[in-house]
Length: 116
Image 1 (cartoon, rainbow, N blue to C red):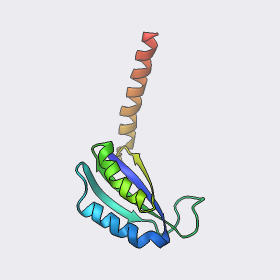
Image 2 (cartoon, rainbow, N blue to C red):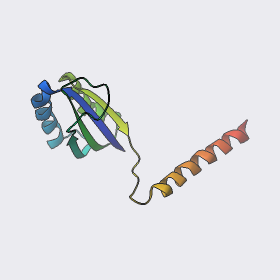
Image 3 (cartoon, rainbow, N blue to C red):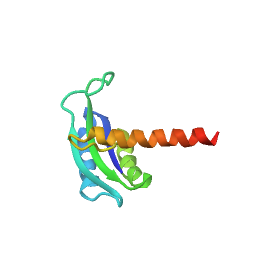
Image 4 (cartoon, rainbow, N blue to C red):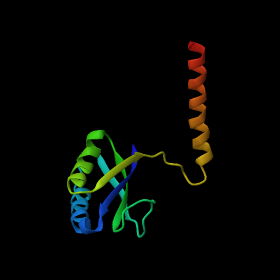
């Protein structure tokens, strides 16, 4: 399953977080495959404290344990870590994915209506 993860940390911790991230991504835990990593050049969300940095990672994770193996060291180093599962939409194919997903929802609603 693919996840987008946000690592939020004070700029004073940037060297420590960058070193730790490098270590975790060069030799990731079993079941975790980082695909891309970015550091925002501006604050992407309103309400962040001044001098706060945000890094974004796109990764595949097989289990909660593999995500925990990445998030725990970052949290203990002083970062806030949020991971969100994402559904990949191919370029030009978002409507197809939406139709497939909404069809599943409609079938489930129909099945649940028939049960009651």
